[in-house]
Amino acid sequence: MSLNSFFQFFVPKENKFYPLYQKQAEYVEKASKLLRQMLIETDLTRLEALKKEIKSCETHGDKVLRDFYSQLFNTVLTPFEREDVHELAEMMDTFLDRIDDSANIILTRRFLAVDQDLTTMAENIMFAAENLRSIITDLPEMYDKSKEIARLCHEIKSLEHDNDELYGSYINKLFKQDYSLTEIIKRKDLVQVLENTTNSAKYISDKIRSIISKL
Image (cartoon, rainbow, N blue to C red; front, side, top):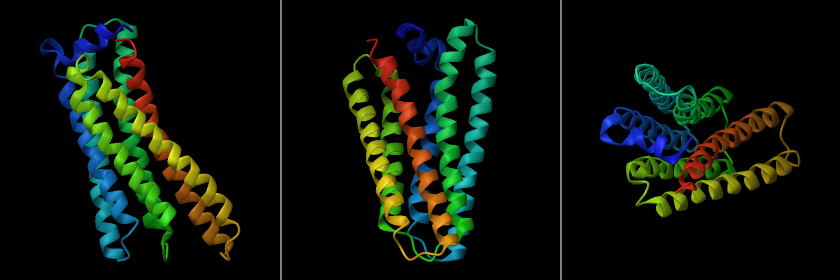
């Protein structure tokens, strides 16, 4: 797909898509901040409330994706363009789903205490979501802001790399701690889902970088 074909979705003729991308980015950012809060929260009632808020973001995100498809199917496009354009919306929705998965693990595993490494991973996810929202904000001006978008994409990739390193070191340390098998499994589940969530953010930035590289 050419850059011009993608760019048309952000000009007045087809600007109905852009607000949907914006909404997705807003829900992702909000959910990521709530996820980070869950990792430092110790009160069960508050944890349940935070999880409920994240689920609300995920539910609203699903509705946005449905609205996106409704608009997309009523727009005259070639099959290839249709596939390429909706992929970004799908990736955004997956990122939000992974945040919700992480919240489920935190709530259901009932951790007595969460290690700093895990909190840092959640913070990196939050920073990636913030960068993503900035990228989406800049997309209508991608010709003029290509360098800034590329910088933000690179920042997301760096955050993903940091979480890769944290994941590896955490797994290594996990089996050296005096944890029960149950506790090891719970913590491994959490670090794995946080890693998967960060990967989802990187996939979005990779997709956008491939578009910007055509400028």
